[in-house]
Amino acid sequence: MEDILSLIEREGDSIAVIMFSGLQYYTGQLFDMKTITEAGHRKGCIVGWDLAHAFANVPLSLHDWNVDFACWCTYKYASSGAGGLAGAFIHSKYATDKRERMLGWWAHKTGTRFIMDNSKYLCFFFSSVPYFCLKYVCFNAF
Image 1 (cartoon, rainbow, N blue to C red):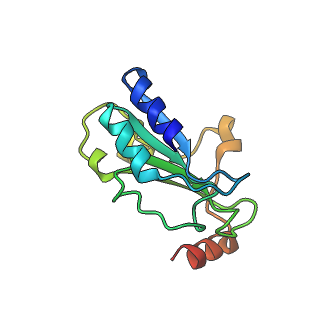
Image 2 (image 1 turned 90 degrees about the vertical axis):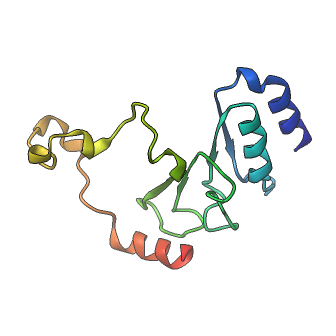
Image 3 (image 1 turned 135 degrees about the horizontal axis):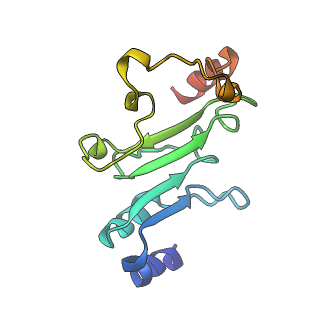
């Protein structure tokens, strides 16, 4: 932990984004996400977390820890199985941020937003999450 914090202190002014795993799966080491996030913010860094091995495994308070963003899968500790949905967190402080960003469906005209008539990209169509995957995620996460 001291090595991480000293690296952020020493090099933080030249770092834009810190992306770190919340839990080291080989050793089981749970990183102090709150302290690392605070250290990154003191240097002006955006701090994100890969929570693939932490989600549904350890308590998480991403908003309270002021984490900027995080992502995770649900097939591991949430037991959704293969094909289960992924998760993402973006801190609410970015809700009114005026910078350019990818808006997904909301970047399309309202009248044509959900018309999927381009057969060239059929491989990207996905209707809904498999029910049983979602069932176990909800059961484990809440």
